[in-house]
Image (cartoon, rainbow, N blue to C red):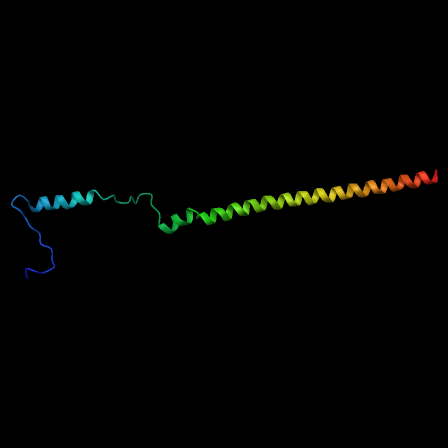
Length: 103
């Protein structure tokens, strides 16, 4: 091997042993948190369970839209009932006029 080669060299001092080097590597790696696979789920499943902001806004819009449609139906029903009441009152008024003219 050439002295200028790009390979890293392990310098072992008189105080380091292979056991120490193994311990050192494990110690460094032990500090890296590892994901727990006990109750984990694939990322696709997780993304399906957590709705995006757009999905939340869409659901809110659909809910409000449904509420407004119900209100519109109620108002239209009230409007129809009021028209019927007005027609009945007109007919009653006409009947009373005809009754007065005969009398």
